[in-house]
Image 1: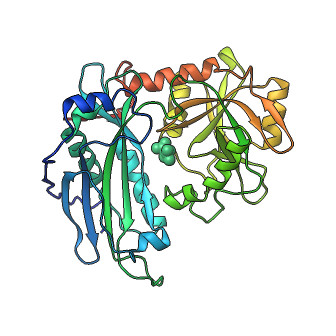
Image 2: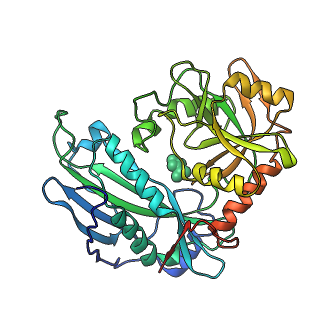
Length: 371
Ligand code: COI
């Protein structure tokens, strides 16, 4: 079954018999943190060989029961997405670029030998879930509803000759505040010299759980060295900067009218982030030229020392745009610009967030209304 198939599945709506009370929900929305509060419902669609996608429903949020021999537990055949829905300035709700996430989901599925999910079905699941749980979309400044679509292999059996013959696609929703806690503040990053995140021909471009499982050891080292995040280098030469934790990186060269932004060129092993893609378009429209280039660790350090590089920031759905203030590795440590949040980072963040919350014009048609 391919993604272009315009299969229209009717979702059965099974409303929760015990939704969280309005009073309790209001308490939970005060300081939701990131990914620890969930709404009353989830969307689920199943796929089996021969039958394709079926059993689409919105149902009460709750545990998933699987056979202990289900493929996902043993071979990690799993992919996911991350996107957000926002309360707009006029009180309506809109999701940011869900079609782009649907397309990336299918690229991840292809790499992991999983079935293609029609884009319409991906977007419909999101529309129905957010509409069902619209009271959970937070209205506090900077808060949003983080949506986590994922697909898991459910076939029972330990053979590895063929990919699973059955899958479950689900979407869960989590009201969130900032990923790095309260106010936007610069993070310090650790250059991972012991571990690689991904290699050419591997799964680095896919948004699969295994990439994140493999990243924990590097992230732990970062924390042990007093850094918030790990930065991954290319696996072959260990000198080209790829991405940061679960986010993409941008570098700002120059300042004022001569500022330009640069992000590592996709080499097959880094994730094509939606925020990354959006900034590559937004930057030039704001008069900030944007390009994809290879940046080495040596160049990063040199450009900061020479004052050529004035700012750096990470970007992702969860992180939005988060400044990077300093870099640390076993043999070196340096500050980027003055170590604070620079004007280009702030300008891009304000513009992007303004579009997402509907206070700035959406010139690109990125916002998808939820009715
Ligand atoms: C996202 O920004 O949606 C991500 O995927 C990061 C996440 C793993 C926390």
